[in-house]
Image 1 (cartoon, rainbow, N blue to C red):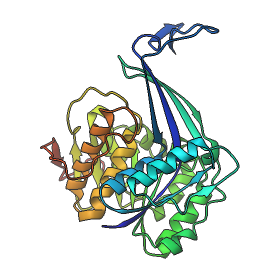
Image 2: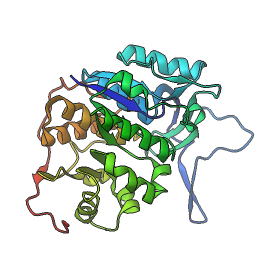
Image 3: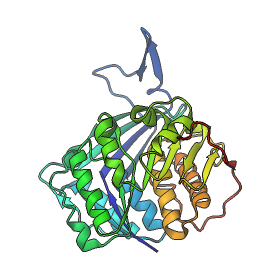
Amino acid sequence: MSRIVSLGPARQEIYLIDRDDFEGLEIEGQSIFGKMVIGTEVDIDKTFFGVGGSGANAAVTFARRGHETVFLGNLAHDAAGESVLQCFDAENIDSSYASFTRTATGCSVILLDAKSSDQTVLNFRGASAKSDNLSAADLDLIQPDWLYAGTLYGNTEKLLEFFEKAHAIQAKVMFNPGPDELKQPEKLIGLLDDVDILLVNKKEAAQIVPGVLLTELLAHLSNYCETVIITDGSMGAIATNHHETYRFGVYEQIRVRDATGVGDAFGSGFLASFADNGDFEQSLKFASANAAKVAREYGAETGILTGDEDSHLMPIQKVEDLAGWT
């Protein structure tokens, strides 16, 4: 068991689920979500209430795997914040280092088409939008083995503080940047000196380094970071730690019910396993299984695995000679 800090947003998520009213329409070359007429009432089929955000999602994975888990992020003393804290209590996640602000806790309303699984997300960042108040000095008190960082909505200076502090106390860092960090590729590359494991998808990787093929992107990113994992949706993923390189497919072919939190499930699933056993290949398999299970359920956390479930074989191949390696 390891002590892991999960740094990032936490919010309440409200799902509105329907089989026809949210169906996409094509208008002048653009996909418009929903057939709803302004000023009318629309009856929907189902609601679902959950907790989300990269900080919360990752924390649940670590805790279910049995790690001592600490959440670091912003909440508020309101109904949404209470729903997050209730989730943390139920999952045995330490929220004593959470910061409470006057700004309301973040909240997302997710309009989900039950037939296609397409969704439109109305996102209020709330308390998570600001992170200057978060203190890297908390890591001195927590003394974690790992820091898992999701987005801080573009605050690369604060991320650097946390990464440098983590290494100063000999904790390792895994980083899954968000869109706001990816808009600053030069600053993001500057962070990678202090990152042990980087997780991005193919499109995100191409925003950081040149390349089209997964192998090219992996080779370029591995110049900046020891361990790199690049996912590619239904095409699987590729990963290297400079000693082993694997190309692998999805854990199983499933009908995706809800894609919310699947990336978080993959990244945190990898670290939850790797912090247990240090087995690179096995951890990639668990990451894939965790992501697949989450995609089969509503909500970012419903399907998160504990590690005790029976697993099955999946397509994974060791790459001996990575084309484009530099």
